[in-house]
Length: 249
Image 1 (cartoon, rainbow, N blue to C red):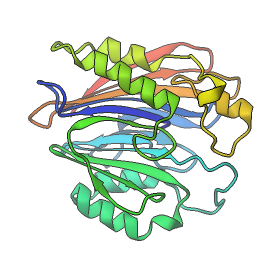
Image 2 (image 1 turned 30 degrees about the vertical axis):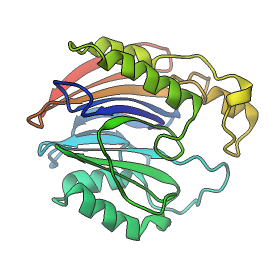
Image 3 (image 1 turned 90 degrees about the horizontal axis):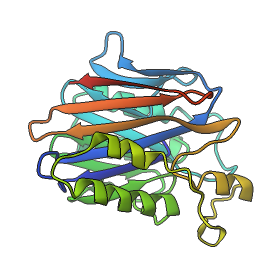
């Protein structure tokens, strides 16, 4: 995933409201979110590396991952970062225990950000940060740098999410609408992450479009006070149409 926006204990009905976009090369083989065979999880699947960018389990666990953008510094033989999400959802460890476990072997992987949740807890862990963080109630944004880094798309997304959750009756359509903002950032506020200007500009939008790379799916996740989760994913094919469906766990 390349943009995750979430409100934690900021709404009277839903302790967690999360809206996210997954950006990827359009020709990378991917399976839509589904219940995995012989596994009590619902997640999309990267059919090339075998992992996932986001998923939920029947035991009210959820996890999401973004890559940390580092230009051309990635290791070609590093293990799949998406496997970290799957491993967490399948094992019985709490978010803090799992985050600490991963932190010990984090440098084996290319740069990543990992969100680990379970009912009343959310932990954030990155192999580009020295510490594991238990998150306090608040409004958060995560792209391809550290949590709440002030990138244009992150700041804009948090502001838009704040407006959506101000209303007692949560509008799921409004969450999807904020994710399809295709406006590019002005040059003077573009981040510098070691990639060419043309890519930096293209990636500055919340919803990315290009001939070969772009936003593949948008997902919202709502968790109520009992730990019950509502998940909806919309897929954007290269020709531009969308598919939507619901999963209750």
